[in-house]
Amino acid sequence: MPSTFVRQFSRKSNDLLANPATDLDLPRKEQRRLPKGLSKDVLAHLMNVPDVRDPLGIRDRAMLETLYATGARRSELTNLDLSDLDPSCQTLLIRKGKGDKDRLLPIGKTALHWLQEHLESTRPKLLLEVGAQALFLSGYGERFSPGSFGNWVAKTIKTAGITKPGSCHLLRHSCATHMHENGADIRVIQQLLLGHARLDTTSIYTAVAITRLKKRLPTNPPGGCNRD
Image (cartoon, rainbow, N blue to C red; front, side, top):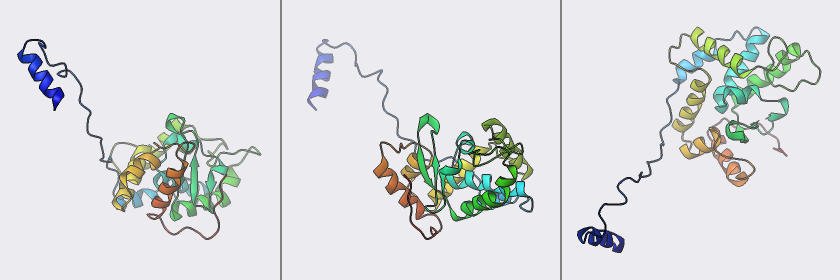
């Protein structure tokens, strides 16, 4: 290349005493691997820790299933409102996630089942303030704080006999890993499921990505999908 020849000539003629590119940082190869999560057998054991014969157990199972199905962060899950869930479309809206970004996620049939059980049999019993919008309520009828929720997940993981470090992020990584193992494009997982896409600027991409992810989930329930 001419530029290479010029540099070599300049150095040989002492016009250029050092290579100016020596201290430049070369771009690193993009990391494409996903962190490892729990195996499916271990995950199934964890999901069975809550006693679903008790209303609070149904809520707890719904929270664990939602974490795993969506890959949501603890702050994103505790920030969920009733209006963020669209059962007819089998989607969940994450509002103002990390980096103040929104994303619309598909949610599997199993998680949706437990969410509906929670809404029908548990949440009404925990509701103390009319008009409360939180999807998940604590035993005091309040929205969970991210800290208390994270502590509860960590305790539940410990109860299941799982010694692998991590709490909510362990389920988040499990979600991403299993999606990838089922054939979902890793770029779609990183940009949509893990929260790197923005709805207001990538609406077309988001729609395509959701369609791709839904192919890795159980069949959607009948009915139209309308989310404004």
